[in-house]
Each structure stands twice: as structure tokens, then as C-alpha cells.
Amino acid sequence: MTVFLSALRACIAALLILAQPAAAHEGHDHGDAKSAPLASAARPRLEATSGPFELVALLRDGELLIYLDDSQTNAPVTDASITVETPKGPQPAEALAGLYRLPAPWAEPGTHPLIFTVTLKQTAEILSASLTVSPASVTSSKAPGLVLDPGFALWVAVVAVLAFTAGALLRRPSHAPTTPLLIAIAMLVAMGSSHAQAHEGHDHDDAKTVQVPSGDIAQRLADGSLFVPKATQRILAIRTAPTQISAHEKTVELPGRIIPDPNASGFVQASVSGRLSAPDGGFPRLGTVVKAGDVLALVSPPFQAIDVSDIRQKAGELDQQIEIVSRRVTRYELLAQNNITSKVTLDEARLELAGLRERRAQLDKTRQEPERLVAPVSGTIAAANAVAGQIAENNAIVFHIVDPLRLWVEALTFSLLPDQQPATALTGESRTLKLSFQGAGLTDRSQAIPVHFAIEGKEQGLRVGQLVTVLAATGQKLQGLAVPRASVLRTANGQTIVFEHTSAERFEPRFVRVQPLDAERALIQEGLGADKRVVVQGAELLNQIR
Image (cartoon, rainbow, N blue to C red; front, side, top):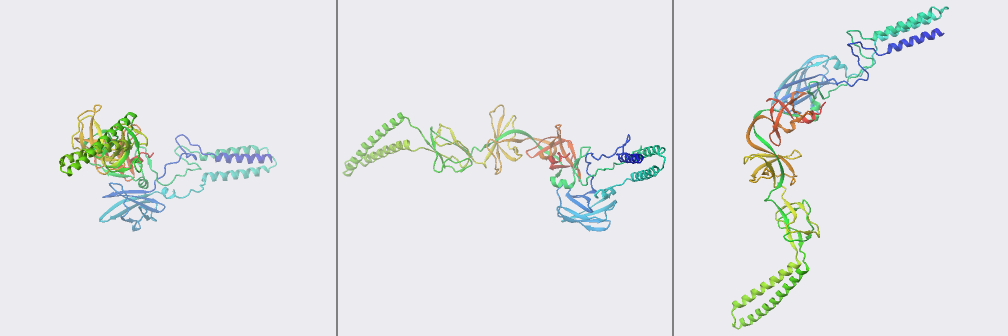
């Protein structure tokens, strides 16, 4: 019985040795069950370009998915009709969810030439290409099952036969010659496990194979180009534009800030020092729209004791003069009725009396009525420094009124700019403002020349004092390719690149030398030729693909 247990242990040890992963010899490689995920295998696909259309078709789950785009702008074309000449005859594709679908039961392993007839309004184009379907692409979509290694099954059978033979030998009366035989059997089984080793010129897979994910993933290739499937391009909204070499005005970048139009803004100041008080309705808040002549605040000038004494003395003198002149007027009126005095003398007395009463009323008004601060122009309250009870100093700015639709830009330049040249301004939010030249100063300000531009149009959302970058034309001409500023990117090493759309699903970075052209465009002077498709929208998203 002990010998039988020894034989059983030998067989189990042989099976464990046989189950060990196959070792790779020098120059060979085997898959690891815990290796990093492999790049996704691209599905069978084709590309075709003709006239205004660019077409990409790929095979997925027995269905042909067709992406149709404009060949110049890469914008999706979703309202066309497509007929496909397949091995089973012509079939119309169904437009659904921004692309076109066609059942493909004919898509067996092999090469299938296809002809696409695209009709859009009055335009019709024929695009032809071949779809190559490999056996691996057909089976990759199926779920992997249990794979039985034929060599492994053979050696299991051998081990079983040897175990049966060992059991038969154990029944013999003499056990002495059986022990060496069992040892030989175990060694033979262990040596037989070498069937799983890779010999020179051969390669074997591990029993635990890595499942390659199906589908298409945007990725950066070894040569630096990008493979971006059409489905991903639709999500990222990638747009392109053809490049053309032409002459453009040379521009210069100037620091600037937004200022109010001097003809549509004004300050509200107190002419004398006094205490502020609110008018009916309270002080206007920031952003309140006011009209010229509106009362914004009241200023009550303070009076010292000596001032009050002088006012009282002046009031007494005026009251005395008014009483004297009043009696004189009364006497002149009686004499005039008897024609003793002339009417001219009576009129002069009456005028003198009216003047004294007016002076007396103004004196009372000075003591009782505060100064009214009114809006000099119509606009919006841009700044307010009014608090009830505050002492407003002489010439202190209480309110600043600005018309938000009439603003200027003040820029500083170190060289004279030609008059009446177009200019643009770029805000921190990449907003573009069109400017018209208004004038340049003749006095330097910190060794720079101030230049004023008026913002054209009814631009809203701008603030006085907001910093902008002014791009003014210098009058010189430059040759190059004008592209949107969003197309130009900067790499980690500081180089400037743009992405060229070389094929339907391939983008390549191009190192270029650029200079600013205006607030919206940059000028490529070197690194890219004409008639190239440059990404003008979504370039930043492409640059993040790894």
C-alpha cells in the first residue's frame, strides 16, 4: 500500500510539473496573463475621398457603418443619400444618428471591392474602395471559450496509462523491482512536460491568453501622428480649413486698456465741501441707468459760528434796507398819483426793492437748501462713493457716469503708427473687438506714445480699466498662411505646432514659425505649405491624445 501511495504522489507531481507555464527560450516571447492591456484592434475599415466628400466605412457586428464628411471642413454630412454596390448587388444605406448604416451579411474573410454613390442636392459623387476582412477580425468579436491543448491532452492520457500500469505492478508479490519502475515513470512524466517549451524558431501562447479589446481608440502612434476614429472626431467636433498663401498686413501687439468715451462720460463732483445726503429714492446703485439732469445726491455745506453771525448780520442789513426802500416806494406811489413825482423814479424804487428781496431770499436759501449734484450726461453709474453723512471734499468725485456702448481703447506704442489703419483688440477671454483709430498723443508717457481707438459696434459686457491686447497694422505686407489662433499650439518643449489632417482618420503635427496677424488669426511663415488641411477647431483636444 505504501508503494501505491508513492506511485500516486509521483503521478500528481508529474501533473503539476506539466501544468507549469511554458518557459520561453532565448529569442522567444510568450503572453503574460497579467500583462498591460494591448492597444485595441481596429475594425475592418476603408477610406475614400472624391470631390467634396470624404468617406470612412467600418465593419462592426455584421453591419457597415459609414461616416460621410465634408473633405475641406471635416463637418459631418448627414442629409445625403448613399447607395453601396456590394457583392450582393446595390443596397441603399440608412441614415441614422448622424451616420449611415448598411447590413453586411456578405462580409466574409477576404477583400470586398465596394462602390459608394453619394448624392447631395445637385451634387453626385462616386467613391470606390476595398474592404479587407481578416479571419481574426471576424472571430475577435466572439467570446473566448475553453481551449484544450492537444499536447496537454496526450500527456494526460500517457500519465493515466502509466498510473494504471503502476497499479497493476503493485499487485505483484515482490515489491522490490517495483520501486525503481515507479521512479522511472515519474521521471518520464516530468521529462514529457517539455512538450510545452518553445524550441528555436517557435512561439507558443500562454494557456491564460489576454483578451484584446475590440473597437477603435484614439491614440498617438510611434511616429508622433494621431489616429483618431471618425466617431471620436464627431465627439470632439474637429474642424479643418484649407491653407492658402497670400499677402497680409503686418501687425504689432500693443498693451492697452478700455477707457470711457470722453464725449459720453462724466464725473459728478461737489463744488464746495459739505455733508452728503440722499435725494428722494436714495443714492443710485452701481449699474443704474441715469439721464442728464437727474439729481444723484445733495450736499449741505457746514457753517461755523462766525459764518452764522455774518449771515445774521447781513440778513439784518438787508431787512433794514428792504424796509426803507419799501416805505420809499409807498411814498412815491402817493406822489405819482398827484403827478408830483415822475413815474421813472417810482419804477427805480420798485426795482431796488425787488433786488433787495431777492438777495434776502438767496441768503435764506444758502442757509437752508443744500447743493444738488446732478448727472452731466446720460449713462450708467460706473463708480459710486456716496454714503449718507459723509463729508464730501471740494472737487471729490462722488459718481462716475459711463455709457457702456460708447467705449474707447487706449494703447501704448513705442513707434508711430500710420493713421486710419485697421486694428483689433483681444480681451483676456479671447474676445475680439474691432477698433477705429481716433488719434495719437504728441507727448510721451513713460517713453511711450498713447494712442486712442474707438470700439466699433454695440459691444456689451466690457469694463472700464479692463486690460486688452491691441493688434495694430503697421502698413507692411507679409506673405504666409493665415490660420485661426486656436490652431496654433505650444508643445512641452516650447515649439509651436499645428495639426494637419493628412487622411480621414490621421492627423500629423507640423512644427511651424508664426507671428501674430490680428486678434483672431496668426500668420504661418514657415513649416507648412499651401493646400493643406489644418485643424481650426479642436486642436487643443487633439494635442491631449496620448
